[in-house]
Image 1: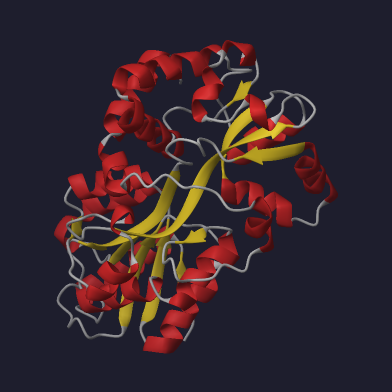
Image 2: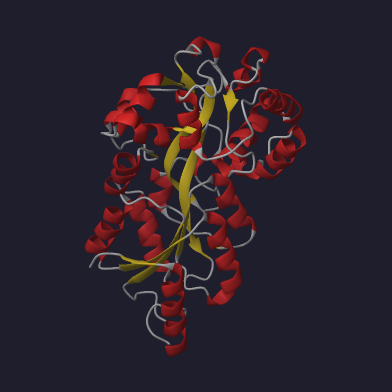
Length: 350
């Protein structure tokens, strides 16, 4: 049976009615009931096949609520012990860490997950696990700059790039995680000096998402921007003439190949603290680490699988070429994100 995609208001009514009636899928029900309640911050259509295949393989039906990371975490807190959530799927390390700090996950032990998910891409205590990765790269206008002008993240603070840098908000998790990694690598003082230099080079105030930054670079509004790889790969795979033109005018730099490597972030998940179906939840997490699911992450949403043995067959990712990835622990990056937010506020990166 395929996954059921419930909007938030409908799902709330369904779960509330189930709780009142004591139906399967409530905290009082047995863990073996063939249902999984998934709270997901992923909004990618290609994940539909992933969920349907899990149901086909296990017989476990998926009820899904989709919302932003913050909305899902707020919902979990308000529902407390009455929450129907079994698994929480979030798209950034800082939010996974926040959920962990708020006690919204329950740690799990799994030899499968420990074997397949690299230690640097999961919580050492088993609260959450990364299941896909994306790199944060520099996208530049080929008519304005050369790759040699911007070999590192640190290059964005060079005075010669004044008025050339486009970025999204400093409060967005993607940038918070990057700056947290810079704190870990450079120390807080040097990272703040760098951030101030980047702010001094802004072409305009931070606004929009990563795709907006790429479009601004192609239009010549700025010379270089920071973006996640899967946004650029989407444009590379597009058949729309205007998006093909954006790719033609721009190129990608893998930053810091001679030093610590290009920053990675993850999409990851954990078992909700009050999961009514913890056994099903663990089966789902282990499924996400399977070769089949890992291939969907890579081919469907232009991300990289975290399981190293999985072969990626994605023309856009192949075209971007190999790169040296930062091996810094995602858990360490996540822990540093509160300090990163304070640093960015001081630097004026709004």
